[in-house]
Image (cartoon, rainbow, N blue to C red; front, side, top):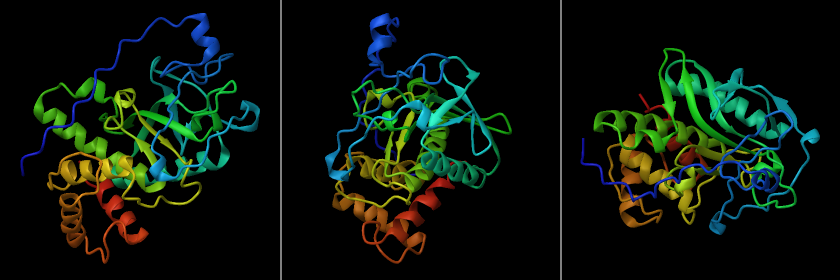
Length: 283
């Protein structure tokens, strides 16, 4: 396999601070208690990539959403406690997650058994700057498989492990990310910033009910392509987030292998074909 370039440095995730009453009322912690009885969630992933043209998030109340203890038949477990609990979702967004889960068994080569998460809806309390406030976002921490293996999105935990383990875990990570990128235009990984070192954030703020489309100006999507080329297709490129000539050439070589008829940026079918094929390369 070709040499893989070193990841761009990702700052260390700061240690969790004690949850104060003020923090509970303000809802400002990076990860939190979404879904606990009597408490609004405290997670929040805001976005700052205007190149993808997302719409503005908005606040909704919990009683307008679906209460879910499972997605696609998989139980939802709150990552900080390891316990099953209910979360709240926009109905259309939950349906998209159901469809994604149904495809997971094919992508991963075996059934998934549960999803560990940091949450979905949170009470924006007037600060409506995240799709979590709309019930249209989800923070994925782990996918647990029938054979006992775990696809971990906890880069904060596995990034410093033995090289062989890191390589295998990273392949599974980016394969799962590819399946998410297919269905959601905005998928935030550890490459986005340090706050996403312990989960993958996804929302349908731009793509809505449709499959995603590719925009070469989107740092988020280009970084994902570069990571998939590097870690899944043995086409190492620098993880810059820029749609440069080196990245385009590597994507074309993979496209030729997949018999895609156009470049990724030229037709949704090529983008979707690349992502579907990448999602199947995690083992």
